[in-house]
Amino acid sequence: MSIYIRRMREEDIPQAVEIEQICFTRPWSKSIFKATLLLPYAAYYVAVEEDADQSAGQAPERDAEQNAEQPLEPDQKQMVPKQDAVQSPERIVGICGVKKIFEEGEISNVAVRPGFRGRGISRRMLETLLQEARDDGVEDFTLEVRAGNDVAIRLYESLGFLTEGVRPHFYDKPVEDGLIMWLRRNGSV
Image 1: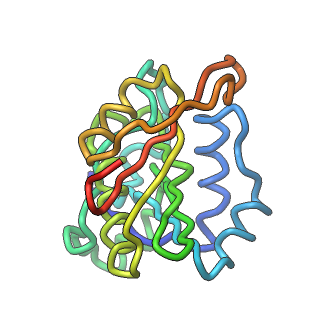
Image 2: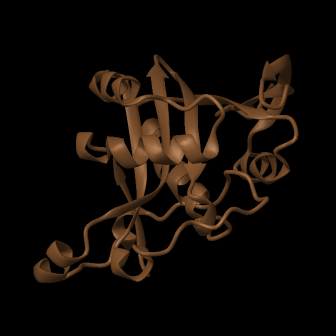
């Protein structure tokens, strides 16, 4: 199995919605994704499984790990012969996005299918997102995460994010505080 990261396309929306429904208590709808993809200041990414044939018949297993892993660089994509690509449709296994407003980027929707967690997919998606946004002039990034999502928090901290605030009772099902984390170019808080 090979995973690569690329920009989200409109035809990816149904699978992105499916991942949202599995991972979040307030998932985005198709219309929200479609509208967001049209925003000139938004960039959304997907992690794609090239060997979809291997896992197409398997239901994703649920595990306790939350949404957080590691991204592939775009140049790590392995080429698949055209006939194989036709026979094995792409399967989206992870999503993430950023809205760029001047020099700041707001990261959202970081999610990986449960059966694919722990393989570095979130990290690779985020590294791709951060690099492309920086190339586009973004200097600082923010995101929100459940206070109890230790796996995601460790990932974000490993990328340089620091907790700068708390939104009490921000999440529901279950009710939980949200941590506001920042990655600042100059390293200061």
